[in-house]
Amino acid sequence: ITATGSRTIIANGTNPTITNNSGGTIRADVNYGIETSGTGLTLNNSGDIIATANIGISTEGTNATINNNSGGTIQAATYGLKGTAENSGTSSIITNSGNIYGTTDRAIYISGSEYTITNESGGLIRAGSDGSTTGGHKLAIEADGDGTNLTVNNYGTITAAANTIKTASTGMEVTNYSGGTISVTSGSSKAIFVDGNNTTITNKGTITATDD
Image (cartoon, rainbow, N blue to C red; front, side):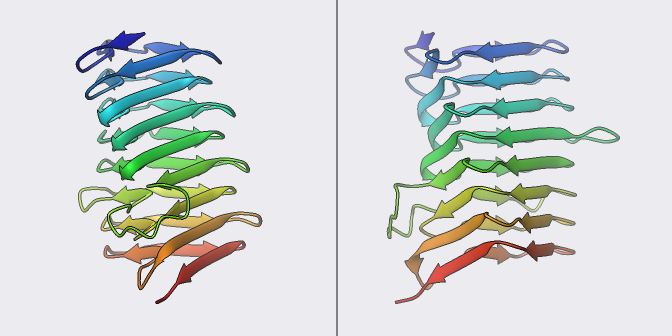
């Protein structure tokens, strides 16, 4: 399914379910492969969801479940996946066993509340190209100052050239489990950059940074 402009799929109703099977492609030649604002979204991706410019997936509705399965790719130049829902008494869950890319920056960007991101073993969340030392290839995961109570569980690989995980949010928990890697590949930058309050980081895996 291809849109020559923006917004290949728009889902604004309640409890929409979108399944993109292996071999399937949802593509916007500009912005927004998928845009949703309805509550209760279930998205299962085993194919490719791509925006050649910005925002592969945008989810504004609460109580969303997004599963990027092994073999699945979510990709945009900026904002591979963007979540802005203000969950209250519910949560939005993002589980990645495939690849989520911001080919320039921001593979995942969250400005909402009560999101849980789990990057499974074999999953890759990356900003920029593999091993990039370009400073603009930044922010594999960014939680901005409007975010609250966000959780990142990593069993796979999260990487960027600069500021791989950055949080300005409140109450964020980052757990890097055994076998998990969080890395930054350009000199004098940060694997995890905390600029918010009440952040908890627990490491049982590998967190690495390089330096010039």
